[in-house]
Image (cartoon, rainbow, N blue to C red):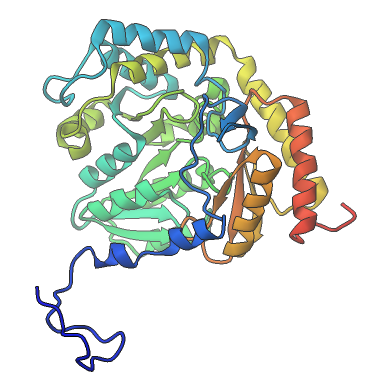
Length: 417
């Protein structure tokens, strides 16, 4: 590569014909994080120095955690931690290979059986992450000439699974059954069709209209897949999820779940008929070509399932806390959208205002998550709050007072609120 001689007369900003473009140029030009950091408004990759409890330590400072998905407060449960440690002592820290080859342990098989029982299906398959579960299942099931019909608010990993498949994706307006039917009615009658939805929408906190979805699926010959990442441990009897919440387990073909929310670990699973799971076991590339879930994670989930059943008060407490905080926000005058779960969004609107409000709350000692485009549509930036079973009434009452101050400061609620 040669450089242009100084004083050559090249206009400022004009590309040098002798300089070849690099695929890394886009990385050099990416300055948004730098600008946010310079303004003190960069909200990501905060280092949490303690476990995921209701209070955490960030940069040596204690903060109230209202941004964790540990809905049942199990990630620090003594029994679960000990079971994970026991698995490491017995099996080591990893399996050194994929489930397909040398990475299947007895506890993998035991966990799959128990997960299938939890959600009321014949069989289940465990993946190393929830993201890989969705990309693997959707990309291997939907082929050319087939269709995926997804809610416009489906999670990013569902979207990636759709893009990896060879099928065609159609998206219907959020929870809009008339629009879903319009999309279904335009598809060839004999073509394969998969309707995909979140059970609990992870940013909005509302629940999918599963009765409407399953009714339309039956009418138009489609199958239904529910991503229940935020529904397992939260909805339904004994935390069995969205399908159980509506009494529609038999009408849902595939139930997906993750371990990183209520189940205190990392990983994911898909549940369905034995034949479906057998097919995915041999065809889902993210399953076949990824190292298997670690012994510690698998053992932790097994213990979490036991605790979830034995300590049923945790789900009850979770919902008591959810109702208390949601009512408090509504009485203050915040816009919480259609939230009806422990995920409670505070709609702020503009990108910059959202980050400033996040910073205000951070300085006051509350850990929350700002959600900005592309995570949400432009103009719908929000502060995402998630409640757990471990929060005390005193902690939540204090949080409401801090949010009152923030809401007044940024003009989100009336000054007299």
